Image 1 (cartoon, rainbow, N blue to C red):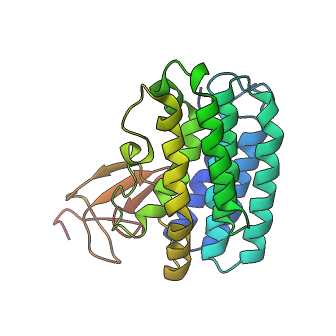
Image 2: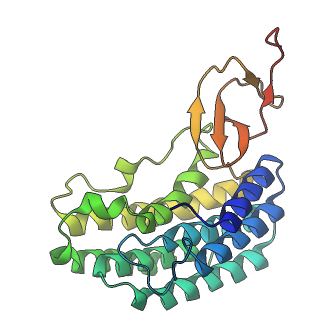
Length: 262
């Protein structure tokens, strides 16, 4: 099943706004995508009966990125309100999940909201999430399985997107970096996610705010594309994401070349 049309359309609008450096609009559209996804994570699905996959994680990820977009837009008060809202939503959803590792993931996103919105207590929240993962270890049969569910992927996506802005559009936070080296030790393997974020996410958000730039998420990419060129930086490396064709390097809209390659 795919996301609801409303969630997909608002995310696409948010990506277009990022490309145009309209960060307030991006924050608004990410919030609308999040609200749509929270209301109905998948057609006919309730957020309060999330099942094993946890599709609601995608909506929570939209909330986190929207919070960052507001800060980049110079709207710290709105970012604070969005982060406070996100913390409340994540806490409200936690009892709906059956598995302790999923509840630990929701503790992780609480910490992400605190870091993204520059709220007090982010470090302590990350420590609490790490402890929750370690406490859940005996109930985890397959660490890799959980990290590839929508809940965990949705919570991992924001730091990966924010990090792209300072890395020339490349993958600056890989899946391997976010996790421990031994999936057979599930508590430590998953706790590594939050310890990595504890040390990096706040500074990555601060760098995005300082540079007044939030990169678009990375989608399908191609280097040295013959059909597109970035009018902003001249790159021919392309990022297809949502319904946009963007420059892989600076997230500006990429223009189609004419038949002569110019």
